[in-house]
Length: 291
Length: 307
Image (cartoon, rainbow over all chains, first blue to last red; front, side):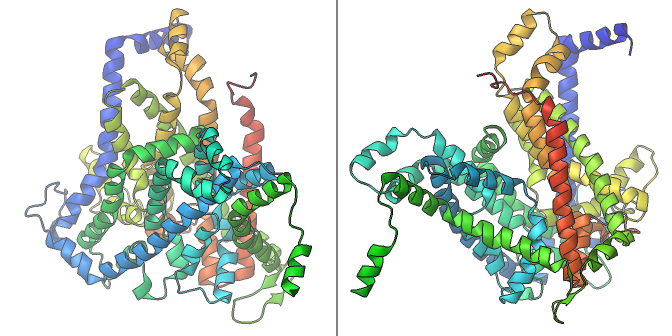
């Protein structure tokens, strides 16, 4: 690139009019591209089996086949899958919120020898790929008879609730002023009382962030249920049920029903996102930047 | 009485400092226990298993370095490494640059930022299974969205999931749909850069390009570095797309490393070999992270190093 073209290119960037058009065009086209698969999903989920295979595809299903949703929901016992997922979810939420905040309190508010070493180990486990322990964990869990139960998907969360969550809460606890606990110390309160009565109520925004990430993580998890629950259709989670639903119709793929089922699986996630958007953004800010 | 005597012998800490240490370890004990039970323990079991031939039914049979020999002679092992490296080498840099670029543009449109941020972010929270189902239809040769779009601008249709050379680009494209997760991290970082720095740059006669090079990129380098590390580690763990959409095919073109571990462990029940593959993955990611820290980390600019 010669010097003159370079200057003219940067000059163009500094041209207010050009810049505004450029930014708007890119962002709008990008947004359209990002949104198109969602529209496609929704549109396909409302098509008849025949309309699915029409080419070129029509964007507006005519007439909209709402019964796809009913059919998808009842062809396989999705209500059971939802219930199974909710049981795991409830256990994991309790486990993560209590266990992670408990550990985070220790890391954030108590000074003890070896703390920094353990904190370094904590950070390392955030980075470590969980996939590595997949095989040996499966071996151990099958030895102790935990395969075909929800135990492998829930019990580990009671032990710290995930390194990332501890890290996030620890960052939050450290922002709280030390004086908050002083009065309680003078009254002779124990650390557990201070953690449970003073710090935990103040950490509600951070806890909300973690609760949301745990919801998304559990609802979306596929590998865990695939390893431990795939043998018994009565124990399927929604993710596993949807994966198995792909091959539910011998020889042919019912895209219409698959799209309806996928839409139903996505809706709760998007709903939670919209309800709790500010906690999402908060979590991202804490995790990504203040480390 | 006996219990009483016993208790008094317990080394209950008398100093305040020792009591404090005990309290500290009490609080972090769930993490420590979990670390040994669910990470160190399994990792050691895996290390031990690497020396055995074991299908979980017959008793384990010691074969020493047999699994290593098998691995070095295993074409599919090399194939899965190649496939994963290909995915990582393309999807991580492209994703990093694209999401950074989008975050930059969005940061200028401060008023409509929330709307754009939402639209770009949503794909990244779509459940992996729903994502796989949706994309296997989007990528469908005859009736898929992508080919319909190509067709409408006069390009030929592509058999995305049937052609070995197109399957990987298709999965990379699909992974890029979720770049919003990286983008919002950049966006949070960009909003933390003080306006005064840009104003100072402007007074010095810097235009948009010069501010980007001299202010934004240096100040954002820790965030870029963070996303790079997270991106590399994440890309090595891709599984669901290969498992559900392509089944590792066509002709092993999308046989991702984790998918190959899964097959050896949970389909062929070759636990020794699968454990070895898992350890190899661990060392690869570890080595790669160290290399990135060593060779890329030095370019990261930390604002408060001096203070």
